[in-house]
Length: 102
Image 1 (cartoon, rainbow, N blue to C red):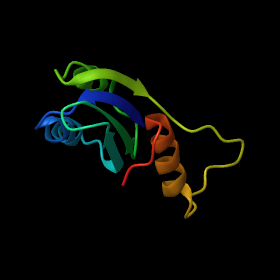
Image 2 (tube, helix red, strand yellow):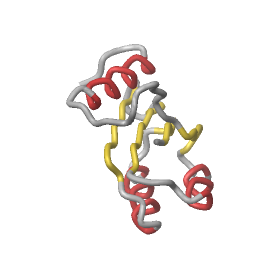
Image 3 (cartoon, rainbow, N blue to C red):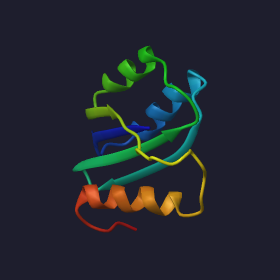
Image 4 (cartoon, rainbow, N blue to C red):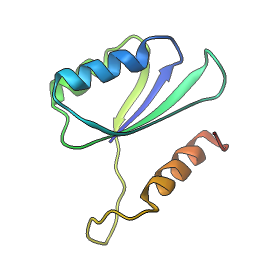
């Protein structure tokens, strides 16, 4: 999973998706929020497999990217999909913004 803080500018999501797609990295879930138009945005991108280091470095070099980190959720239970997983990710993302987003 990627945690990205970027400038809210046209074309960023397309460039990011193209870079990941060209590297055969499938996006499983993409959540984006922003504080206001043209301000900083936060993206959480869950992918199906590992992201090659070269691709992660290229993402970090996109002009709109301010911060890029690998992220994940820790659990002491075996990995198992449950219906609340999507809600849990959105809740944590919204907490990181300090407010609820639609």
